[in-house]
Length: 91
Image 1 (tube, one colour):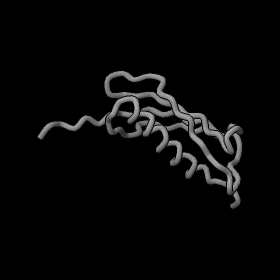
Image 2: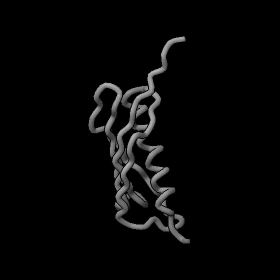
Image 3: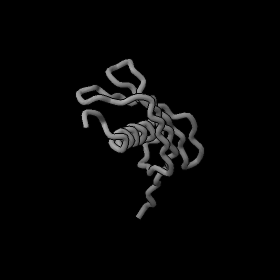
Image 4: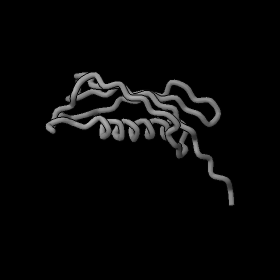
């Protein structure tokens, strides 16, 4: 193909967003909703970065987004997601 498939870019973004949620809440979470906007292709051999940030956290729901950048400067996508925190009950 010569470029990154959108499904793989989505999986990468989901992982980066989950790490941002972990950093904010120190809790395991699951993705409730993930929306991707693709702005440009990511050619084979490019370096892809996700720059996530938490925009809101209320009870067990966290809203997070990430700018996707290739080769350190070129915007190639945006991910927006909603996560639910998983609180483990004591045994």
